Image 1 (cartoon, rainbow, N blue to C red):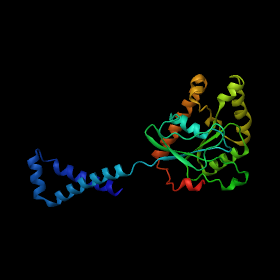
Image 2 (cartoon, rainbow, N blue to C red):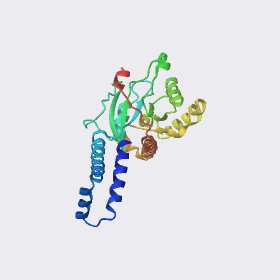
Image 3 (cartoon, rainbow, N blue to C red):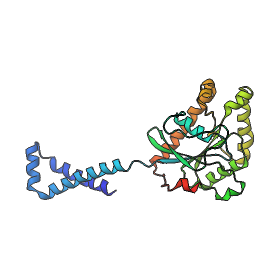
Image 4 (cartoon, helix red, strand yellow):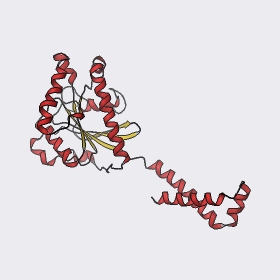
Length: 261
C-alpha cells in the first residue's frame, strides 16, 4: 500500500509537471531549477524499482489444496500425479505403491492452474476412528476427498469442511477397476449409489462429485468416460482457485509436514 501510494503520488506530480513541456531539454531545465520536483521524480522512480524488486522476490502466494482419504491405498498420490500430468520418472513425481500406502507425512507438490500457483498436499490416510475431533483442515483453502468406497470417516471430513466453509470435492477413484471387473454399466450404478443414497442422506451437494482413474493407460482406453469427468473437474477447480486467489483469501501455512506426522 505504501509503495502504491508513493508511485501514484510521484507519477501524478511528474505528469502534471511535464504537461507544459515539449522537449527533453525543457524537462531537464525544469527539474534542475526545482529541487522539489527532482525529489518527487526520484521518489517515484525509486518506488517503481522497489515495487519491481518486491514482486520478483515475493511471488504470489500459492493456494493450498489438501488431497485426503479415510483409508490407505485409495490412490491419492497417483491422483496427484495424474491431474498434474506427471508420470513415473518425471520431476515432481509423487511416490506410489500398488500394494499399499506410501504417504506417511503431508507432502506438497507444485501445480499450476491457469497461471495460479497451487500446492497440492498429499496427506496421510485419516484412518483413526477416534481422531474425529482432532482432524485439522484449517491450513487448507480447498479439500479433495479421494475414495473408492464411502466410509463414515469420509463423512467426518465433509463435516469438517462444512463447519469451516471450505470448498471440497469428492473423487471416486479407481473406477477403471470396477469397469474391468464388470462392464461399463457399473458406471450408472456407482453414480446412482452416491447421488441417490449417500449424498441426500448426508446433505452433500453431488455437483462436485467426479469419477476418476489415475492410470494414464486406462484413461486413454476409457477416454469417452473419464475425459469429460476430468475436464469438468479441472474447470470447477480452476474457477474456485481464481476466486480464492483474487479475493486474497489464501492464508499463510507453516510446518504442515510436521503437523501430519
